[in-house]
Image (cartoon, rainbow, N blue to C red):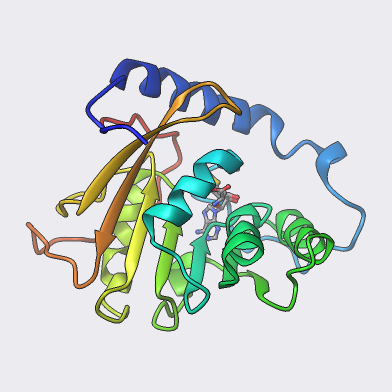
Length: 220
Ligand SMILES: C[S@@+](CC[C@H](N)C(=O)[O-])C[C@H]1O[C@@H](n2cnc3c(N)ncnc32)[C@H](O)[C@@H]1O
């Protein structure tokens, strides 16, 4: 990991490219397994699916100082890779929440294929309806507006819980630590931020009026 103040241009370019690629490629039917979806999506996702590279996930888990006693929630878990890696490499329990039914099914299959389905649960839920109080670690690869809108839900977390954001600030909250990770998988820099509860808010207004629909423009 490097200090976050380096290579900003490269990260912005990489992030934009990643989100655009995700919009075009990542819900390709050929990538979706044949099991029946849980149920139709209740609404459109707030952001499209882009998987975090596994070498970035490893750094996210290290940044959270993850142990086998932790319960990791990934809000918008995609194919479940973060909670699967948390279980596989750290023995932590993981819960992934995801709106897109095909991704929920893929996540469940992947958890079983990796031998961690006893530790990992993937549920089809809108993250804005989830009680976060059982979690000790929250992982987020989301648009900054989504992160901002989740701030009221973070009040349910026990003191000392860690929130790790991938390529997104949390408006009105200073991170405890920032890291730049150069991924060997996609060749670009990724910015991680670590927040520890209770959060110290600079502003009292922490809700957004509607969900975002466009990819983020990240300014680390
Ligand atoms: C950028 S991907 C991140 C996937 C995974 N967390 C990772 O880092 O590999 C964001 C995911 O959030 C899901 N999502 C978007 N809005 C959501 C919502 N309101 N509730 C649950 N999932 C949502 C999308 O379908 C997508 O799979």
